[in-house]
Image 1: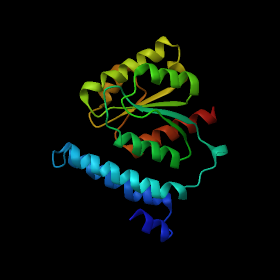
Image 2 (image 1 turned 30 degrees about the horizontal axis):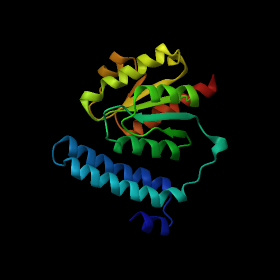
Image 3 (image 1 turned 180 degrees about the horizontal axis):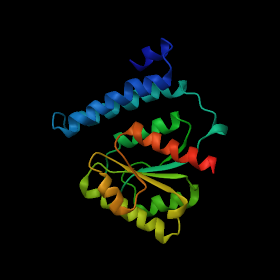
Image 4 (image 1 turned 90 degrees about the vertical axis):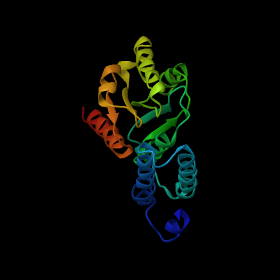
Length: 194
């Protein structure tokens, strides 16, 4: 379907935001309600990845006009990266330089990447409630490394709530991929105005 869309001249950004993202949102909702299970999520993730591999060469981006830099990771102990992968793709489409650390990423690797890459934003993802505390651990480690004031922290994942975000000191809790992208754009637009 992605190849047909590109051959038909569909704007690749539209193919992602109006095709892939809503499709993955539906899959995510069905997973949350128990209609879909992990095997369906894995298949949907593979389909999304294949679609993105077709669309990526059609995306045009001028690295000189990058909005900012984002380091993104799924926290240690969590091997789910569908949501993170959607966000990573959308960030790139919207003009961000993205450093994707992958899934099951230890806190020390996250902190090392923030030190080395000096991002504007750190995005942390968790799908499992048992791995959510790793988000707080990463924020605490940022403080210890004297990096917390240098980076905005946005968290996301289906079990993550605003209350949890506030309790660990995150700057924002993304309710979905598109809302998270909007917040990142808002932060960097405000930053450039100052």
